[in-house]
Length: 270
Image (cartoon, rainbow, N blue to C red):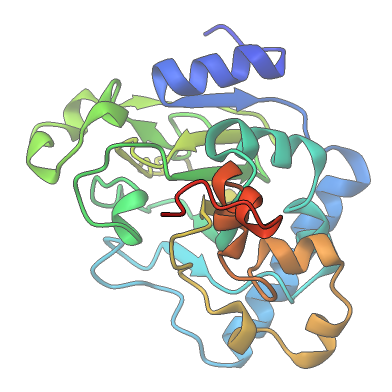
């Protein structure tokens, strides 16, 4: 497997193949902080009685889902604004996008593959005609076929409707191995699944940051979800990423015609 090394190469692979791996993005203390943050978030979810097994999504309780990570540790807030993360997202979505959700999936030994899906179907009905979403998987452990590496269906980012997928797709999926600290970026239309963890003692922990074009409603209502002290301490760029201030007005303001109207010149005046 060839590793794309420049932003241009990564953008090309994302467009042509629907995914790309960027190794070694988070290392040392950064990676340790993300692991610490997940441990804290998992403990908090358990103490609050949150449902960690998503029935109907995963096959058994060896797949652990931890939701609503952003306010659990500063490392998560730093991560979603990290330069490499922003560059990857912008290469797919352009200048105007929002963070739709931030969660974690822990595949423990004995976990099974979830159902095949693409991520855009969670926020946008078919037909899926453009890459209006991108998912970033941040690997906290080495992942390979044995411990449940993400599997994808080659070419499926060109599917425009659910009918183009079939019951035989899982058999044709391919694993994406990646080392701890890597990012696997996916076109939101790419069909994929978690792999089954057949290892004896190797969990596979990933953080899942899902970004969408800014005209799409996010999965999380950040304004209601985040505590006021956390919201008050957010940077202006992170507030914009969460849609806390201007909403989707940035899309309209980006059009040249609207810019002309703001200056008193209406190109469509009669």
